[in-house]
Length: 446
Ligand SMILES: Cc1cc2nc3c(=O)[nH]c(=O)nc-3n(C[C@H](O)[C@H](O)[C@H](O)COP(=O)(O)OP(=O)(O)OC[C@H]3O[C@@H](n4cnc5c(N)ncnc54)[C@H](O)[C@@H]3O)c2cc1C
Image 1: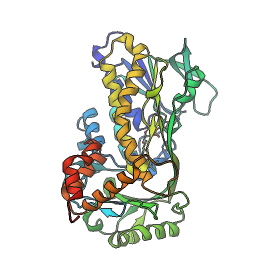
Image 2 (image 1 turned 180 degrees about the vertical axis):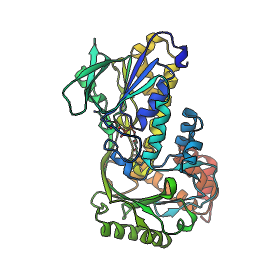
Image 3 (image 1 turned 30 degrees about the vertical axis):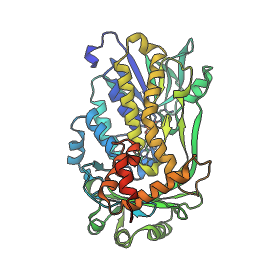
Image 4 (image 1 turned 90 degrees about the vertical axis):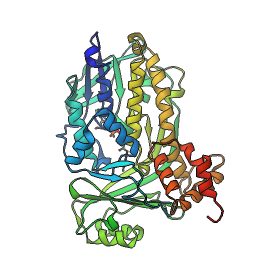
């Protein structure tokens, strides 16, 4: 249903104008007569901003995310490209090293766009706010929800830095507040049980710097990823962004944090980078200071397992599931959740939307979509002995298969493509254990 087809006046309030907030507002604009996004930052749409400190670090879309963007904002990929984003094939142009194995760089047809996070966000924000029924209330802090008979009926907001709280009534409130999402606390206040939290403690530190290369890309690659491996829980991503700018992101688990001083940062990169990549980094011109971001744990809040939820509120994005950033799936996961919300709304009568049916159906549907990126994130971390925590049953077998597959994918184009399709969320994970993948992996002589 488009907003023009909606009969009664209905209002949805989206909390946070980060990636999840924008795509959710875009989806809700098809189902509500008015959508208001409330955001703490007062941002002009260009450059880094305070509320999204991770925006200084490498951000790429997985192949699935790229597909969804085009569905939600037809023509946006061409627009991003025209404005300077780099278009790549997600293997032919990407040197992807995982656990010491570099995948063979065959063309896959999996498209990706490379640009900085503020560049992506600025474009999506313009497109979302161009919708006639969406408005943004910037420079406003969300302080709480309003409730009636244990249902959420709106939000309490306050202009930033001022003591003038007011309320906004809403038929639906969507928590897109990122990792600091507040739904859990609000459930508590309303007398509902909190969702169980699944967590992997990673104690990850990122350090990043933007660069201008003095020559060409390293061996023609547009992204180089050197992933962590047992005994060396550190990694590097060098990626092209818009208009010829590059970003170098370094990371380390636990005590293996990359330093923030320029010399230490370079030395950390030198130890990780293959020789041709190091030569490019060494000769590049730094465009800013080293930015640092600390990420303690990956968290999945199991709202889908709660027997009872209040009407009028759901969570989308990192506030439901915050994945290890190393695997680059956070924005795609948020987009999948927003689409799930749209599909649920499409099949519901107004009474179902206003009641407990919507949160129940939405959390079930989105949980199914989050499972694959969540398990990739958990599995990838559990392959590293440096990451603490109880291992999954059967981990030794999974590890043996995955490492053998990655080793074979150094030369086998079918396997390398299968890995990228599953990793890019365009194919189900079980494809990696299907007969053809098993045959390619365990072929004698490998
Ligand atoms: C270092 C790093 C690298 C990453 N790299 C990638 C990548 O390559 N690919 C990828 O897909 N993902 C990546 N991610 C993950 C990605 O950044 C997140 O998954 C994504 O931003 C989630 O979007 P969100 O809208 O849920 O949260 P956010 O983008 O964090 O947005 C939350 C919004 O809520 C606002 N807000 C918070 N509190 C309030 C309040 N009280 N009142 C009003 N507004 C408020 C904030 O200002 C912000 O705008 C990375 C993350 C990190 C940390």
